[in-house]
Image 1: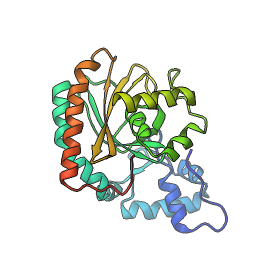
Image 2: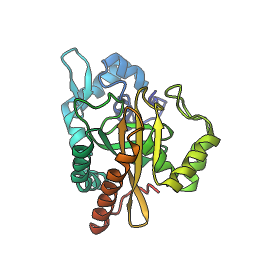
Image 3: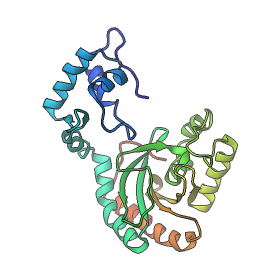
Length: 259
């Protein structure tokens, strides 16, 4: 649930951000009443601020009298230097990997204790999964997340392991001790796997992407089972190595440290 921002003394900017923060992957279209409730605003205030956001292009009206994120926010998001550079460098390698495997391919980075998906390639035969470009998922529930968490600073790992781990499916790992063992194995094996931990029927395999001596992203695939792991891992490692070499050659320096 988004944070409310209508406490006494809050600024107009925080109220505008509260409206924008009301949207998430499960709430892509909201009515004015829903926006007011989720942002903690009165209906007249929400009506005025939403009107300004629509006029600016941050929100757009839908045919059913709802509101959705506008194109202008997407355009601004594409200006983020680190993410844009990483996507541009990785794109040909992701395309080659998808062409060779025909499974869903992900590129992700760590954002706090979540996974941020920067790119995704999939086809008609790909498994239905929850992740989309720009979406964020709990870091402990995905293969790319476990890779990024394993390579994250010790303080990040301690924070994640020190609080309850949300359960997305009956197979989500919620034991800190078991997750710690899995992270240690990621470091020793060089890859992570998951089995129906975020989406039922979906398994994942992920490897780190390193620029120099620093893990800056994770490359993952989603498959119906792990029986083809031995076939997929070499291709994934070649792609990850290629991305890493290209990033190093471009002197890639992300604003956020992934590990």
